[in-house]
Length: 87
Image (cartoon, rainbow, N blue to C red):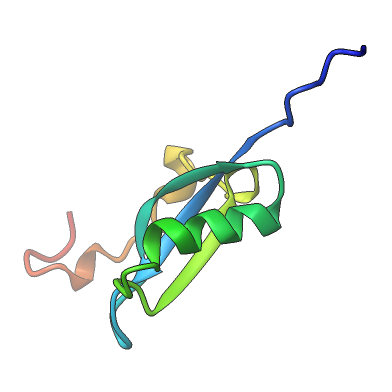
């Protein structure tokens, strides 16, 4: 009898909105083999008690990360807009 392989699980990040007009906030993550099951798992964990009005489920690998300090700096010197003036 051939050995059964475990399904490959991926992390999915879940963002939730508590009520209309609220911002989406990170609620947590779920591990699932595909996007459809991730949706079901997220709904079960974050929606079964009606604590969320909206869910976003995003595969963690699809989230872009920007942590380069050069890219995070403003492109122009706008220190004149600060209360103290130019630096």
